[in-house]
Image (tube, rainbow, N blue to C red; front, side, top):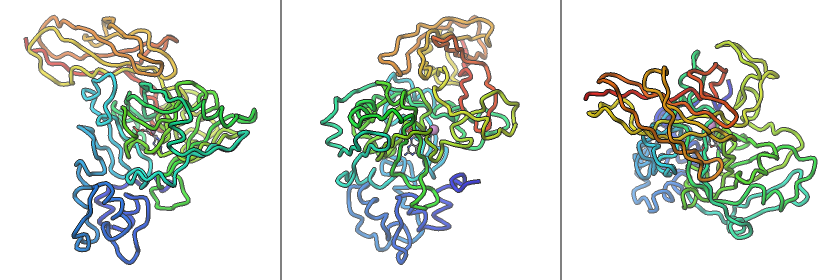
Length: 438
Ligand SMILES: Nc1nc2c(c(=O)[nH]1)N[C@H]1C(S)=C(S)[C@@H](COP(=O)(O)O)O[C@H]1N2
Ligand SMILES: [Mo]
């Protein structure tokens, strides 16, 4: 077991070791002579988050979690989120119930959050005077850009892009896989603005020896060790060169929020969310497949061949997850509602990693018959696609609506997926319950 697997709750941690808790919340160590949140370095970051001074900070008892931080308030760790389900508060991980994902473009308040470590302080202070993005490694010219240079030297691009955690759907695996027990809501399709990844690489000049990128960020490791990175992933050069892979500095028209990677992040759409690295500060081109934290072992890797549930898989039998599989969500209606009419409008989204969704079907008789939904083209490649259907129930009673997308390569969502050790890539059909009382 590595350290980062021992994820504990914030309350527990504050009770045991407030100084370390401060570090974990704020990414830097509090003054050892003055234990507790508001007496250490956390004060600066807290003040920055609040946007105001804390007059009685000297009276604040050690080891208390400031109420504004602990709760899901405007000022909390979880600021600006609306109706998400918190799976873990250290690191912060939260998913969105499907009926709150009904918008074609996911509002920031409803985009899931997946952190492997501690949000860096810069995300709260927004002070970018010392920040630069470095591009180095197998390049002809090592380049560095300030945030303003990134914004002014390259053509901006705005795209609606799906980001889905590789572990979305993990909760359904048996035997259970360790990790966040995501149900279906670790997916979002926000509008991202930034520069094309490819434009940056072309400016630096990609050497023929380069095969993979490596992303380095500023978030802190859960152990508190400043020499450890919580995550450093990358993509093959071909994925970085895709015109839809971007270095984003805005989400839904605003600077990236603290939780989503301020000041910049990669968005490598259609691939596991972990390739969309937040709080980015360096892109290194490598002549080998990147081997940073969460690139190797069972992290974001699946067996090369099907295995029986519970099987131990040897290291050499894993492959890195690339494109995510075809999938869909029913976002209207909310599950478990009683309706007073026999006809029901159903709406949702479908997406297919690097592919395009070609067909969408729904069933209300447990998969015996299927109705083809009206499926829209994506507004741009790598956006999820809207679909609409209308169902007329023959009688009153208990129904389920099942949704099944098929992509342009003929891949169809299965009823259930085979097991893998870390519970990745669960693209089984989404089902909701409807009680018809009419
Ligand atoms: N620096 C950094 N980038 C990161 C992570 C992280 O912990 N640190 N988590 C990754 C994972 S696993 C996912 S699924 C996405 C989630 O992005 P979101 O929090 O904006 O939804 O961010 C990715 N980028
Ligand atoms: Mo993820």
